[in-house]
Length: 244
Image (tube, rainbow, N blue to C red; front, top):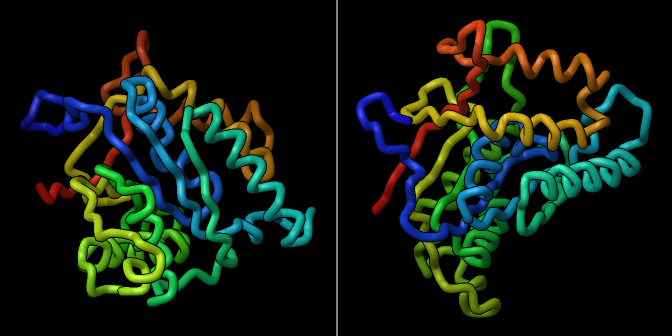
């Protein structure tokens, strides 16, 4: 919840269509899996769009084509645990993502196809996530291309007119953008109840997490500061933009 507003900012009156656009298989679960599970539990409909294939996310046990296939399967399994309705992959090459006009058009296409009221991406300005972690360029460029697609392109019929004239995709602008992996949040959600779902979904990304028991221990250590010896709490933070 926001500090100055006791009402949770996701207390939407009706069922929302939510589109998550991030760079890699596993990004949705790592960045905001507890929140996504929370939204599914309250009746909202979630769709994923993963921009890259994740074909370089390995120490070398598999070749890129094999790893791409593995990560597709892992992401589908993880999304099923969260309760996601659909997953689509744009399959750009891992590590080489750039916010090009071509990719912006492809993201606009997905936004107009799904017509989300809520869109989730990540923060393009967040270069240093922690003192010991440099943010992946794909994360930053994914956030940049998504924000550029939302405004001004997705809701304006004169941008990428072929999407309207040839594919029949009417302009659409999401009502809210929830920006994850940000160093400048204005919303913090309590995801304590759905944290076990997040961890269970992440454990489907077997190619990424290493030893599952050690991974569970790492995830358990991410307690919120308000945790006590009797009770662990977990939060996920966002920068939320509301257009209407």
